[in-house]
Length: 219
View (cartoon, rainbow, N blue to C red):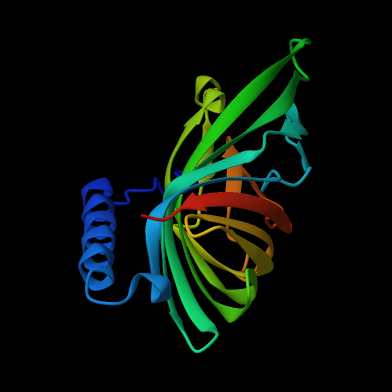
């Protein structure tokens, strides 16, 4: 079975990122500073991977562990009368380790996969003093991945090009420049990721819920 390879246009994503940044820099210069924030953001989240075991005729594949997911990008916030909207553009990366057991020749080894994505959360919420509460959708685009599984002849993998999740959380503004957010999110999209080996196909487990924390700095 030939699996579809992700062909997301990285140049197009770079243009979206540039337009996002320049638009909010221009818009922010037109409004009062206390109503608008814009700047870089970094964050970390629990692993997006769930444990799964796959049994093929010649191999057994068992999920071992997943790394934390790291995020970096920019955020913007427009505030009016205690309400605000906060879109973000984030590049993310995470990885997972899998134990592969050869049932024919014996032996086993750990193979690793590294994932690269773009996340676009659009949060809306309320602000009471320095404290905030918000929620909204998160659009995730699968950008690329590096996989040790490609060393196995006959292995293939199919990814969803994009997913949608829902996220809610709380935030704290530290002074006038720093913003801290803690969020909980879960996937809303149907699972269509799958792996195949010599014509045998297994569907992957849906991405589990994630807890994330991020820190931003506004200009």
